[in-house]
Amino acid sequence: MAQVSVADGLMRTKPIDSLRQDAEGGGHGLERTLGPWSLVGLGIGAIIGAGLFSLTGIAAAENAGPAVVISFAIAALGCALAGMCYSELASMIPVSGSAYTYAYATMGEFVAWIIGWDLVLEYAVGAATVSVSWSKYVATLLQDWGITLPPRLLHSPFETVPLADGSTVHGLVNLPAVLILCLISLLLMRGVRESTRVNSVIVVVKIAVVLAVVGVGLFYVKAQNYVPFIPENTGTFGEYGWSGIMRAAGVVFFAYIGFDAVSTAAQEVKNPQRTMMVGILGSLAVCTVLYIAFAAVLTGLVPYASMKGDAAPVATAIRQTPFPWLQTLVTLGVIAGFTTVMLVLLYGQSRVFFSMANDGLLPRVFAVVHPTWRTPYRSNLFFMVFSALLGGLTPISTLGHMTSIGTLLAFIIVCAGVVIMRRTHPDEKRGYRVPLVPLVPAAGILVCLGMMLSLDGETWLRLVVWLVIGLAIYFGYGRRHSRVGRAAAG
Image (tube, rainbow, N blue to C red; front, side, top):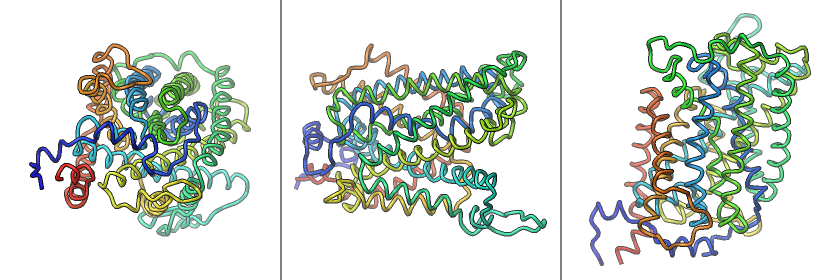
């Protein structure tokens, strides 16, 4: 048996031929049913959600002022540069797994594991975080309709709930969060075609809501709210000025998270060489236009300073218009937005684990495909339980920044992967080619790195702790069961 050094083992890559076999069938059992419009809808479904409706006001109030529109443009630039790199690699390696698969083919197993584990932070933990917000909005809407849910069933056991008589009790479980995560997971188990149809309907609803807010709110914008457009820096990095714009870009970057989930569907797409680019860049382009228009109207309706600490700045802004029905419409739009975000994030998570299990880095159970539904239903089931426990029992309040920094790290590796693949596999067929390589990938790395560095030290610490846990699992299980490693050992 051949001896493989530790360094060589960590750097071993998955051969392109092996990836091509997976893409062409390879016994994976997934069904190619998605077209370009399904992918665009999938991307928009993941992107428009919690970030737009909650972080826009916070970033404006605490970091950038009305110049938050510039922050959205910077974040979009980083996403566009990374999106082009995603499109090339997805057309070249049309296999489930997203950044994990690309890293495995370019930088080796160790980096691939880090990204695969990192994506759990973006997808599963992100879905659990969104479910808590979804629960709060649903409870508020039901209360407006005269239906009051027991407060102990809307909070985790670690939260104290004030009652109407002035007393306090501890929560039991955030039941609506648990129920929505279970329902979405069951839908995903049933089939990708059914899931994308539901997603497409909800996407139309929430785009209509965003357009309604922009169209109606535009007539009530006050020009004085835009002065000063770029507030003077307070002397602290990240508090207004250009450093504040960059800090806000790192914060609102969370609002763009999700377009990369389109690449996890590569193994279920018809003609992925052409369709992946349309899905990734198309969804990103639509959302960028909507985001900048939305941010401009929001900061024009309400003075940016008044939105500090406001968890629902959109509702506050809509009160500046004489249309009470618009606030209900926005609440429905927010709920719809959260629903599709959870659907696409949990979809992407199951496909990443499906790929990692196929490679032997995780137990084979995550790669089992249902004989009728043609979905990795056991992976869906696992993350239904995992995310429901987080959403129902944990008061998740700080994972927004954590999700952003994890995603930015994945984007940097994808951009680097394009440069590496151009040198190591220059003749491989590419359905889409990034222009001006290595300048475009290098620009993507710099923009994303700039946003990472603008985030606070606690966020970096949490990322390190999460990666340490992942490394323990890799060295304890993944490295010893790797299919590529066993093939190399002979």
